[in-house]
Amino acid sequence: MTCESLVDEHLNAVHAYARSKLRQEDLAKELVQRTFLKAFQKRSQLRDPLAARGWLLSILRNEIAMEFRSTARFEVWDDQDFEALPGPENEEGVDPSLLEALPDALGRMPEAARNLLLLRYQQELSYEQIADLLDLPLGTVQSRLHRAKAALKTALNKEGLSQKGGMS
Amino acid sequence: MKEYQSTSISFDHQLTKALHPGDAPEDLRLNLLKAAKTQGTHRTWHALGIAAVLMLLLGSGAWGWMAHWNQREGERFTRAALQDFIQVQRMDFTVDASAQESMEKCMERCRQWSAQAVGFSATLPKSLADQPLKGGNACTMPSCRSACFLLQDGRAVYVFEHTLKGLDVGSNKRPMIIASGYRARAWNEDGRGYVLIEPPGRWKS
Image (cartoon, rainbow over all chains, first blue to last red; front, side):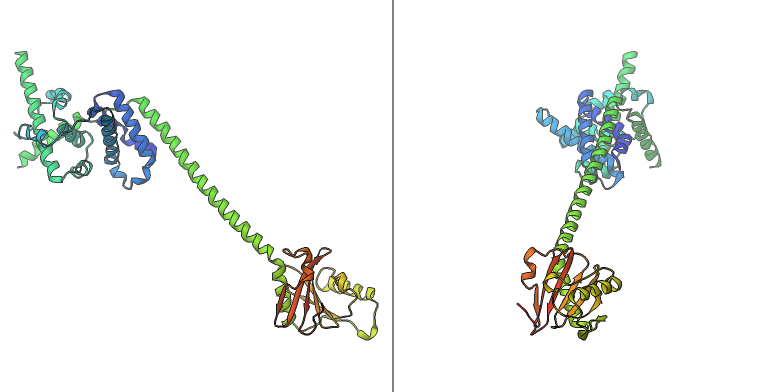
């Protein structure tokens, strides 16, 4: 896989993930740049081109961790984040108009839950790839993702209700 | 259950669509593509550098081997001449001892015969020019034409078309090879290489 094809195929997704995680465009750009430059150097380590997305994201996650460590802003999230989330209600979709509030709703999610949702729905990684990337058991990824998704939907529905309430 | 799956997929689909990454900033893309090209160039130069070093090593190895091979040319031809002397017992031309030709005439006959039979004009070296000659034969040596002159006293002189590498100035003063009673010494003189073979009991100091 050439360096150019890494950029062509994965830059948008990797940048979007960095942007969602960091919420600062300049920092996101800088870390994405560092990520790709490292990837170019270590390109021979990438055996399976299909695993390129996960590989790039793991480099980016390291870069983010290093950045936060150096600026003492590294945030740690644990199982309690998921325990605090509302339990699953139902699996129906939401009113499409509510999706406008998705960025805000995601922003209010605990970091670990938001991260899982981004990896699954923005990066479109499989459960197995997420489990590899986060070094978690597959079952844990599935249950946490299920819970995170339910919580997001609850948040979106509440948003919708409050908007309706506000309008009435 | 079917309903559960379809609605679940629907929300999944909504999320995937809503979170679909937009385009990354163009300046970031351009910077990275530029770096990618440079990286490719670096790799190419790196590969070329490795290839050049390998070529250099192979070249110097081959050169070293050739130098070593050339350095031993005198010894190799001396050994080959000794082997030829022991194995080949024939004379392509002979000198009539009763005719008692003058030395000059004898040398002239050697020149003429060797020019015709071997392809270059060969004569005895200065130090042996006064030795009575018995005859001679053309030799088959790898990569160098040569003639062999047999002296009346049983010794033989091999004359090579070109000088032999690896022989120093005093090489005619000491034997190059002594084996099974045979003694061989080699030297260069007037653009020719010479090997003198002395059979057992015929050594002259």
